[in-house]
Length: 250
Image 1 (cartoon, rainbow, N blue to C red):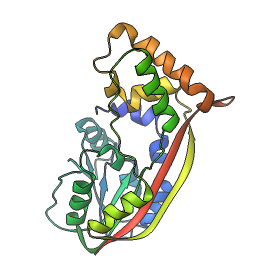
Image 2 (image 1 turned 90 degrees about the vertical axis):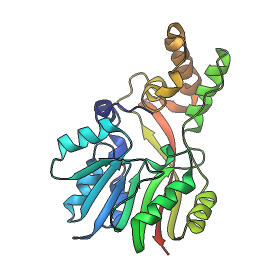
Image 3 (image 1 turned 60 degrees about the vertical axis):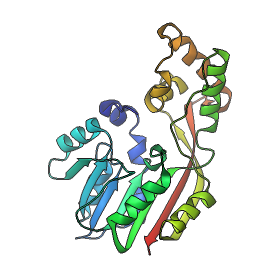
């Protein structure tokens, strides 16, 4: 997945804005060493640092890390893959907002890497998409692709049920302390083209290989299919379902 850092910040800033309660759940303390896994452009990394913690931001996107370094030159950021990142010394907590569902290749490897990054008793605090996340959006995409006789789209996310992810955490060496699963309909305020804009930003890889002459009509059809469920008088909504948890390394 290729991210455009500028678009991510300007058009989809709600990703960071909705992370504020998660930072409160993390409750970073002065002097703690904390990893922000999937840090993006570093907005929440900076928020954690403002509470006195020493924070390392890690993201798989070079563009995101370059933007983070430019915006927050006093903080530490590195490019790294959540599946296999390795740190020189243990940290007190690993934090992750709206990123784990992108690390879909091997979720257990991500959990193992997080555990190895933590000191015994260290905290893993995160929020990700849960089962049913973007169901209406992805249904519209799948139907539009089928109508245009395109191969079934290979959706890039991992949206687990609460029971599934709790089991992975427990098997991976964590004790789950808090796990919340909730709907969070989210206005797409910066998406004048509705679901089509959402696809361009969050599922742009699905358009690779689609003939150029049908991209726009295909996305118009996505809008038509998604509109009954997601378009309101006030604008478009994303049908988000979130999985938020706090776990402790055993």
